[in-house]
Length: 202
Image 1 (cartoon, rainbow, N blue to C red):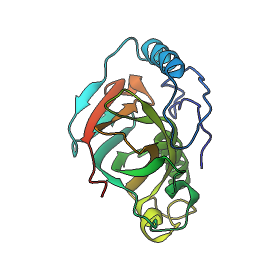
Image 2: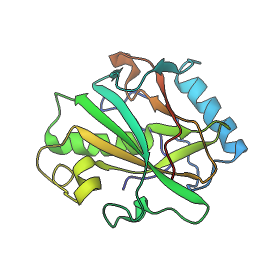
Image 3: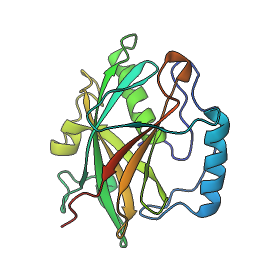
Image 4: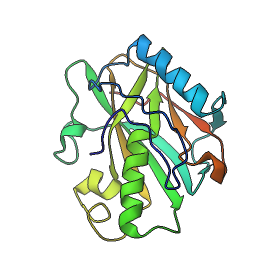
């Protein structure tokens, strides 16, 4: 959906100023060399801040946005709708992170949809117990994920429930979601972390 490897900037031009580009390989872990570059970029952009821990189901204030991370689940096989991002390559498995948003009151519906899709694809990272990091493959509304309903992504009112899809290594366990603040000057932590555990992969 959105471009890969570009750090997201908020509607006011805030957030991460770096433009770190990394090739996205579906279902593989980011190489250690990239992790060093990413860590350095985050340290500079976030003023050396450590991730602020948040539990699931607690709203995280991120400038103009409030984001609540709900749960992590495997994408069913076959997936609920025929989207390529819901199918991983051999050696990888697709996982879905369910979130809810609030705020963005000053935006038109079309702007909200573009902002949310971009932010959820560019501004969140899934990590595992080994420290591997995974970029989002796609971000879509929950109705589109569940039944292919495009309303809210292509016109109409934007739903508050969204799904972010990641492709992770088959043996990866103990996940956490890192969320970058798109506009730190607007309030909230510069970087948030939500521990998600390991979903039932049976």
